[in-house]
View 1: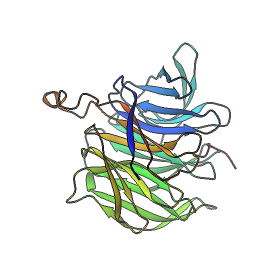
View 2 (view 1 turned 90 degrees about the vertical axis):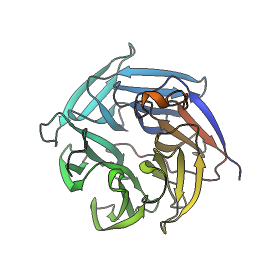
View 3 (view 1 turned 45 degrees about the vertical axis):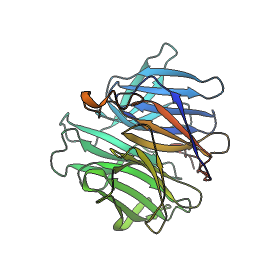
View 4 (view 1 turned 60 degrees about the vertical axis):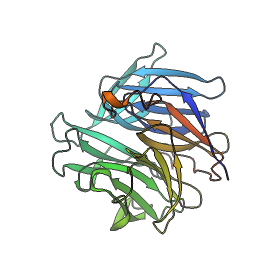
Length: 296
């Protein structure tokens, strides 16, 4: 099947990240991590609104009341967007050591409404990144650690697996996932990017259990089978794609956030669409609706 790539929003993000399709609103949300801002696309008319935040943000999840919970440099924050383009943000839990170079980064909700979110040290010093689970009662549990940067969190459609990529370590890990108890076990290597162009950044799973991921530094999106083999690679007109998510009425469109900040100044002329929001149609795959935080 032949896929096609569209430029959906050309105003460049410094570091576009965390796209999520809201199935109730039929709109796409994502972040510019270092603007910092939440952005919202309405595909019905192509309009994009931005909501300014006070702290750098790595990811977010939807809440039942229309607010968001974001993983930020200040910890987990409740985010309520305002019509004037601002946002009211309240810290609800902060599991980070008080080093302002630490940031909550990639994250996703499981289908019991828990927010799994990994951290990163802005200077990539040591193995300080950790994986946390924020429960609907707003308690936080440390689930794993010893990463350089936590990325690529995704759940298999049958809820038997959770994936997490350590981009700097060239590794995607997979865990056995216990949905009822919110536990992970049996950590093992799923995929390595050693020897290929690009590293796994943000990711999601389709209904067949394939793992779709952005290959940052690699100008491509990859589809990896449950057996850990690349079964498709789609070249992109941007050097640094950062994360993918399924959207559209049938969840068969793949949205891709990208980054401009990662390009050196002398490479920006060669990649003029860096930082744009992309959409890939015709990939022959369908995604799974993203759960809401606290949803049963």
